[in-house]
Image (tube, rainbow, N blue to C red):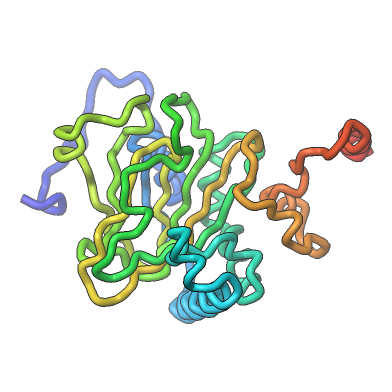
Length: 278
């Protein structure tokens, strides 16, 4: 019997507290809290999705030309485009993607107070070939602790459809609530592969274990990964030093980390405190 055919009870008793029904953003936030992952429609029209796809290809081509295929392959970086929103090709497209309103609505529920963009990377799952995202990991790697509220959220934007055949992401539901990586038998019983349409965000609590699947097709599967976190973790790449923030809104500057660059000296620290008072 499929999930569609199941009869899910609607009646209940003995409940003293219950989460009310809400918007798509509310529903996504609720699922991330409970299971560690959710899907969210980014709200783009087909023409906008084609524009993102074209920008991705342009950015990747320029990135490889700039850094060299041989060098990127030697570093196991050939299938990643680091800091896409700072690349010359398509940077406006990827800046807008990082500030997507539907995404912001969920993040503001999951991370109370201020959050910043830690990283935004283009990711290619190559056909018939392994890649460096296909191992189980957390997006705060090497950490074995859990928190009562999210410290960081991964928002994986699907440039292409994610299918079982092209290596859709695997997750271990609720593993953001346990410190150690689970046993092999637990992984085999509970690993869940997430199919998603192009234009969707796959949202993950960054402490949930996940892995990219193997792409069995003959076509690459592309995504743009974002990590947003509380402003106590350093950014993967210093975005304020690579983005012209003159025309950005105050909220966008906050999200991109303009207010959280560590001071270079005591004098700079005191000046930053003075600027916040004015």
